[in-house]
Image (cartoon, rainbow, N blue to C red; front, side, top):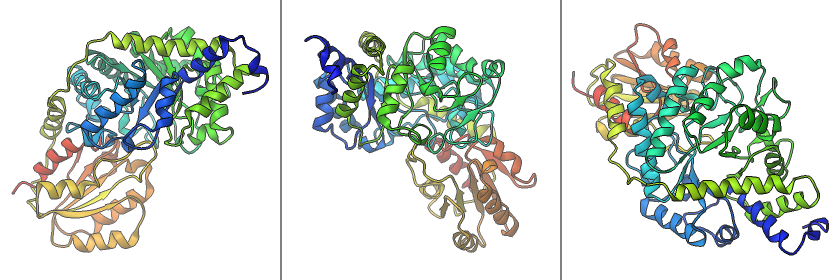
Length: 496
């Protein structure tokens, strides 16, 4: 703490310290709460975010959240829970949430609402009260490297309708929803985990496309909005997370949002390529965020709190702005304490999604021993697949099936897969191949050289269907949800 910050009256330092802690949401490592995190919670930490690294099973998660709330009952506990292949809760949840793209494609608002309610009720039963979803980004750019099937679709209308239904379902379960990534992450070709994307579109274009789903979900009572690490040049030359013009002027004043604004994870390279995490936390709160998110397991809440306190002391962060941020977080926690929670449900929505996805398409009967080549995207810091790939799924359904997962260009592995598939039906899965040159090349080679039955599964965005030759039978799964893929495997491995 600087000398200047020590000039507060006797009551002020404690208040500033608690406000600083209250404006932070942090991650941690392990399946039990470390002592320093528990102390931070007792000292006023605003929120904790859970990831796959914190989840072993339902009993463990319930014990973990209970131990954190034993330190302070009004702590917010959050988790990314958007649906599709990527589920941080997989070991604790037998009914993974459908991908948003599959819900948008079915376009049944009641089903989207029920899916969100089912998932949120599961979170509530585990002691989690903030669902960092839905993604209401309009995935208008097929080259988008990070949104993909996390979006409900490619138009503002579809995303708005299903974003509202999703928020309503989360609220029915009694917990908080968080539309993201404001002002919109859909029309980029750069991953903000790795670099700083930029959107050079007019205010009129952004209003009509990107902002429409946020306006709709705000009107539906969204509790929290997450910011994007993207420059929108029509508004500011700073990324939205650090832009007062966007967080305060656009989100607060123009769209009328009165809830909690959280940043996306500040350790992402879009932010930290030019500043430290600590400086980013100060800048984001100054810009109008209420929660500065540091999601890495090595997050140090005490050091981050001290950095915010120092910023107040040296005049780079207004104490009133910090107090306002912490107040919003406390008010959300108090409101959530008054909501009625529903218990975890029985997975009916995802079973319906799976059944309707299969019923709406034609699947070749390949018999019980196809060879499966799963061409899929590489692992990513934003997600952690909860199964190894499609060969695992097919082998569980049909014992004679096996295959290989390829997550990048590998000529030798591809040749070996071609040899292993000789004399057998071949299933080739692709995921966002329209933006992945090596995958398109591998698909072409597999289709050209294989003699016998071939079926192509588009397991990412359905735009991939356009690159599959018309003579080759194909189907889309709108993502890689395990329940959906199991139903697809049953359809394809039935006897001719």
